[in-house]
Length: 144
Image (cartoon, rainbow, N blue to C red; front, side, top):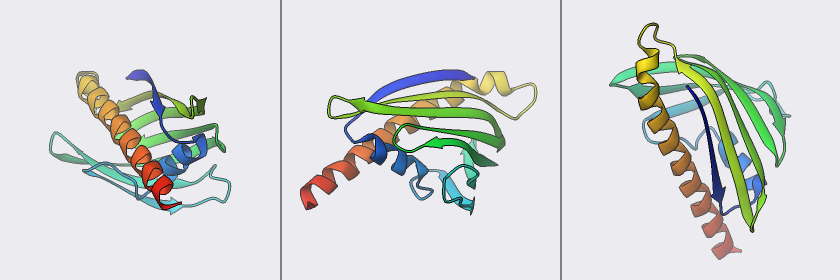
């Protein structure tokens, strides 16, 4: 499945990427745990688990590129294989966030039939992240 989605988030680019790098910030039904944490992000990896159609799926994500406040790229291995790039740029007091994904569920023969399910979950997770980032931004503004 290849997909691109661009959204506006009411938070600074650094806050968006910081949230996306936080292994504790996961949508319901998904867990992530750092396996290796690199000081410059590149080379950091974490294991993840989620359920699809009631079946637990596991894998590993490795960060392959990171430019603070601008971009992060990662590669997935395991139940979902492929690459993702998230670019962030300032936009009207917030951020323009573009997520490009080229991934597939690693289930031979039926993976193409799962693409529509995967795309819906992916889009739902992007909206969840937007909501959570903006909620943190709002809380930060009221406490400062």
